[in-house]
Image 1 (tube, rainbow, N blue to C red):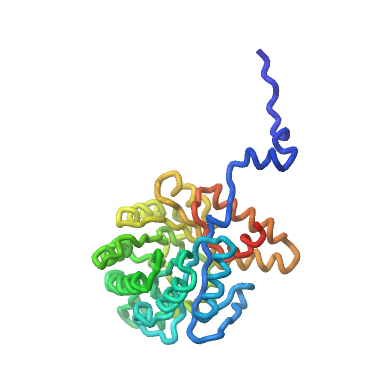
Image 2: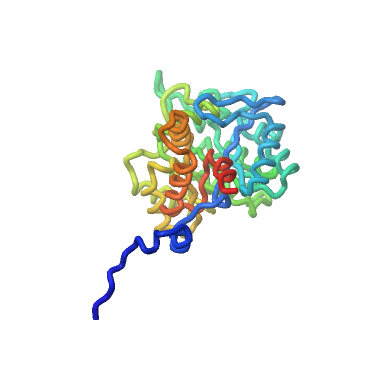
Length: 328
């Protein structure tokens, strides 16, 4: 028996056919929108390296949260820039901290919006590192992993007490997911999930974020605790450890340069996978759009679809509002 030749073009000939057989799609419900909270009132400071993104005081954060919810986006990810910084990042866990107050204000104004908080010390430390710095000898420093865990527990618990719906530790200290899970469970927050930055590379794509969060390291770099960009098997080990310690969601950061890692985690783990389309990815696209080299709507759609095709369930992106508006 002769079989007729299969010709894919038959299913590409109009929009309805293409939609019917489309393998992957992205919607606003898959997206999470990052926001940067700063002290003060009536503050909306543009971030030069991230066109369209601002540092905002809590009154503006609340207005932004309302808009996000009205656009059908399910969640925001909050970062805080404190009024004061010190060597231990103590403003990361004080009750009157910037993130704690922002969480309370947003949950009061938009109770059904999911509020996720970044748990790290780098925005709060005077040296810009994600942990406790120990000086070993002249010009030689190291991060004290175990001393940092207790401080991360304090920050995480303060966020949960403020009303955060989910916590997202981004520091990459060994054992921090287990330490945070323990302190949450011991204090009646066993219902609060953890979205772990399980696979966070020591990437060059973070530059604009460090402008936004004012957290560039004052010396050295973060390669001793963030992952080597050359490694993929290490990503599996890191994700496995976080899962065993109680992570509910595993994140890969950055996104586009690490689609292979997203795919690997999707194939190996049953947990939800998140991808962070980081500041450098955002700013490159914005720069090309401003120069007339790319069509923003099409490129954003394509890049977000790539995350979904690789296996991401959640995409953290500064394009979330733009995508939601374009989808209406």
